Length: 232
Image 1 (cartoon, rainbow, N blue to C red):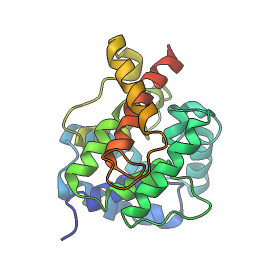
Image 2 (image 1 turned 30 degrees about the horizontal axis):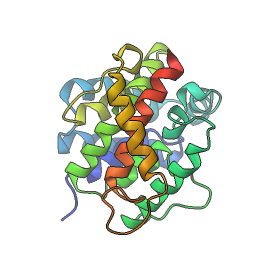
Image 3 (image 1 turned 45 degrees about the vertical axis):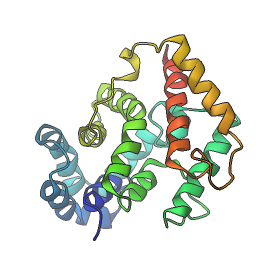
């Protein structure tokens, strides 16, 4: 049986993708998918209406121009997860390898021209995973989605509503990065230690090996500190 999250995550993935004729034509289907499964809260669903209406009615070239202007011309709104975590550091490459391997183990093949941390691709992967696993990974990336939601809202961009919808699915809403309290030093030290110990651990039988959910979660938690530092 398909995971409960299948259609919702696919729909949200599509909404964050580059606008095409096919996407605009599929807006009624996307709208129905989000409404039918009921994973997105009613309030978050209301916020999505403006973006859905724009994608269904506005000129395609205007939609494409707006998308490029918003997501491709500034790192602040990048739709690549690790851009907000590692930036251009060498850790980003290792994180990409880990995520791509995790996708492969989960049955998702990443095309050679796609980066594994592209958020629509990440959501596509979650659509094929058991719901609790998907929600757990969303919890770990919540601080990034919260940051993007806040930044896009300041630009009065309808795409902010997609991140509002994503965050409404998780069991524990994330605090916006800009307003988050700093962790205790001991907590950060523990995160750093866990990351260092598992950075090259790819062997089978290791609970935090390179393709495990646990390892990805360690990276995301360590990233929370890096993201806060970048906007401090």
